[in-house]
Image (cartoon, rainbow, N blue to C red; front, top):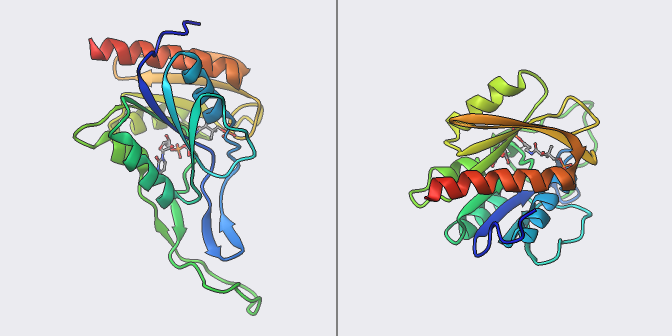
Length: 221
Ligand code: PMT
């Protein structure tokens, strides 16, 4: 592993879940642990990069030599990403961002009255699309977490979100993906692809950072 590969390069990584408040004590979220995003942050720092890690709530310690920016909701993560993107050359979106949030967050704890209740949801901003559509966009890498038709949906997201690369993650398999210690992915870019077989997330992150660095540096030159 080349410890000078990303010398002087500033990378921003999003990681973990977001929490979308329903009332002061309840929220909508998902099973992301942050392990994949934190492993990427650590591998990028090992490769010499200056790393900002925009993290939703996790139980993980901040990797060494990484600047962590803590956020809770998708809106917070969006604002933090917009503030960071002007200063970074590579942006990796590994966070499992809630696509929808409650239309209103109740000011007081919602009381149990009726037999059923409805929560109206509204769309959250798409953070990685906003980064990739900016005029001064960094080299932008997304993830695609899918439970079916993995490569077709991933290719669709690569194009629709205007990304440079996408990491396709089969999250139907519980031994990889959300909250697992291992992962296995296929990385797609407009002119190629590479599959990385199942291994620990730290080891896989090192391979992903090497591949992303190669594509980024060849796009630069
Ligand atoms: O955290 P771990 O437990 O280690 O699990 C890792 C992981 C499974 C969360 C990770 O490997 C992964 O696949 N992350 C992406 C999860 C996801 O929400 O994917 P998606 O297909 O819904 O989103 C596609 C891309 O758009 C992602 O890069 C996502 O960060 C981004 N996105 C999505 C919605 C939104 N509002 N804003 C975004 O930026």
